[in-house]
Length: 251
Image 1 (cartoon, rainbow, N blue to C red):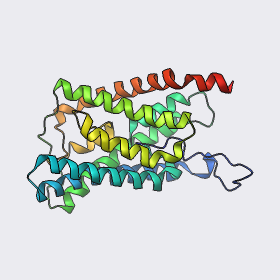
Image 2: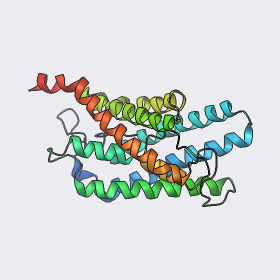
Image 3: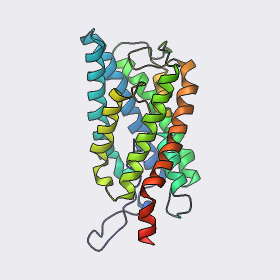
Image 4: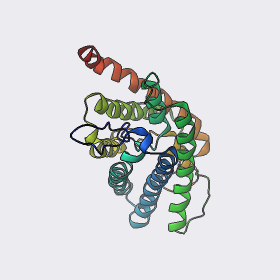
């Protein structure tokens, strides 16, 4: 869940105040990733708890959870994208590093090493915050097993689609639509993937800390993260397959 290079607009004659990467210090970007991921997980977990308190209908619970996530994610990308790129997701961070590794202005190893721990810490903190708001135990390991093979396949599909969307928008110079496009995709993936689209290792880790509607059992975590990483690779391969003509055209 990211806007990739929204934090790195180049200055132009028409927009002389556009910021260059050095204008956003790493500390600020890391803080944005930590706070943004924490808020995202608080939205996911909190809306799940609220949904189960208001209805016993699982379909309505999922609808409420997905709508809360769509609105919350869109707002967070819009707010924090210009600061850090609004990754909130280690797969997106690693994908951006890989695609820009030959670009001096791309995301470097130092930034990756700062972003990912911040995302994980934020996710854990967000789950605990949601539990605290609803009077749940701050830390109670989830018992929601999600280890079935079809759920793991769902995570590959969800993550590949997310990476394809984000980097496809970047390739076609349409990142200004990322807040709506990414939030809409995640909302749809809640329903069309068997796993309800975690698509994010940090968020998955955070959700092990809560034994509520949105939780995932710690024993299911390695499989989910592994499939998310595979999904990220598949997504990048699809980006190369579909959009490599733009590189040839530009050269």
